[in-house]
Length: 179
Image (cartoon, rainbow, N blue to C red; front, side, top):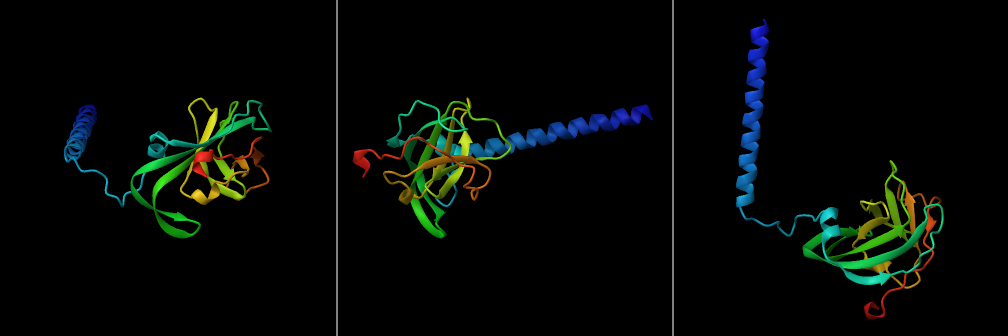
């Protein structure tokens, strides 16, 4: 009986090694294909966070404010690698750029609920925390949200809960060149 168990275990390891080898071969063949993403493919948030951006607005507050100890903001325009179809305010649109809204703070707590970035009464999107938890970044394609004097907020949870938002101490101020 002992020999049979060892024999089956040996076959299991051999099959596992075979599947790994086949998987690596398929991945290598796909990488050698040289194909680039088609324009209909979506771009991921992680890709959008890495692309270079053009500064549209930046605050300069240094005094932590509110329960989340918010400091300031930065808004950047990002050129997309290819036109992408997105939904903006319920309608489909073809866009060639995105906007990153970055909110800084002293140290954001690790939570089970996602961070939500707001501009005025609109939830821009769920935020991604930086590695050192001193910034949260959300991405939107809706340029109409950006106007001088807009209020920026951060909350945790869903995009409908306005009661738990913390307001940034400074209003959005676009660079003169962008207006």
